Length: 155
Image (cartoon, rainbow, N blue to C red):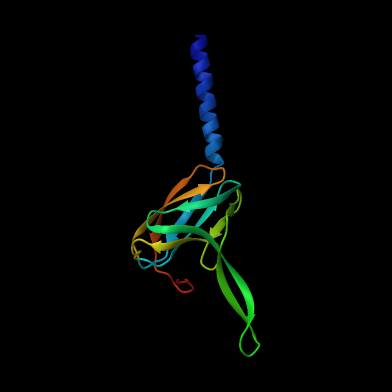
């Protein structure tokens, strides 16, 4: 009887711990990718929430290199001395995720950059990625390729 009580207690503890851990994991919503030519660059956009964490890496077998990126806006002078806005992409070492609120990876902001595509990404295709976080368990996602409606960068 004592052994049975011990097993029940251990089982309960395991289930409770699993539920707490699952509640503190990053949730990924609405992943999508823009079309890209083989050998060129693609990008993945999505939303994340559910845990205080950092996305530190992404992996994808459909390209040679995956980087976390952001866009920065710089003010430069044109040939007439007028101020013009120039957007530049820059790699970042991580992207913060918050338990409350949504971290949005979107065009013109944070995104996952797929460099040197090994295949063409056409509208309707799917791209598999593995998102690696500082604390949460990795998350496997499938991003549907959607037609880009203006503002997409090409490399």
